[in-house]
Length: 86
Image 1: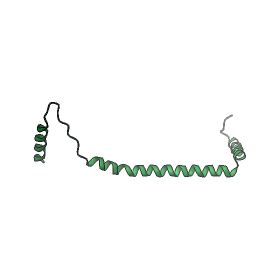
Image 2: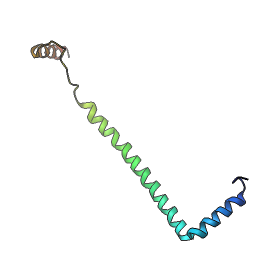
Image 3: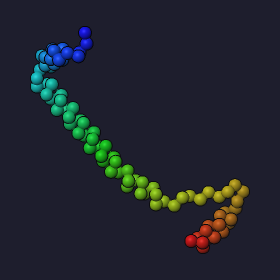
Image 4: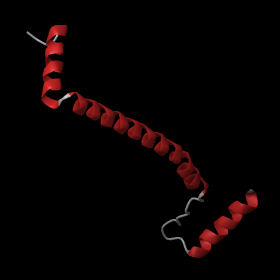
């Protein structure tokens, strides 16, 4: 005997209404609705903030790391050669 019958669900709802009272159940549902609305709004705000963060990260020049054993002068010469090609 499961909860597949509508009569069982009506009994459960009636017991909950008697235990908590109609106004408390209504208040709980209202608070649940406010929580869901706030959650969705925060998710939309987070999605809107992502592209701005991605744009900032995409405009930064990549850091050049010299090869092991290379002197700082070699890196400047290579950088100058790369800039001359563009």
